Image (cartoon, rainbow, N blue to C red; front, side, top):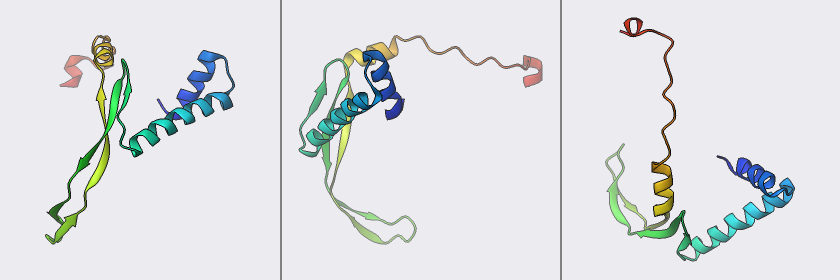
Length: 108
């Protein structure tokens, strides 16, 4: 699902304009982004949580030249799926397998 599809789904589900739905989605994402920038933990019950992990710098090698390089520390957002979402995803029946139009003897 893309952001545009999410906006359309929200507009349809709530009977609001696309502009109002776009504003709601943008405010939600911006709020989440600001929380992560401040290194706050973000938790959405039943869905999951986001936090920022910090990785220390280290000395690495350029794979092409073998030259020793300094890799700076970095922060990356990390998502941990919630128990309820994980259970819903795992209890969803798998999609029907695509059936081949060829017979087994032709496939060999």
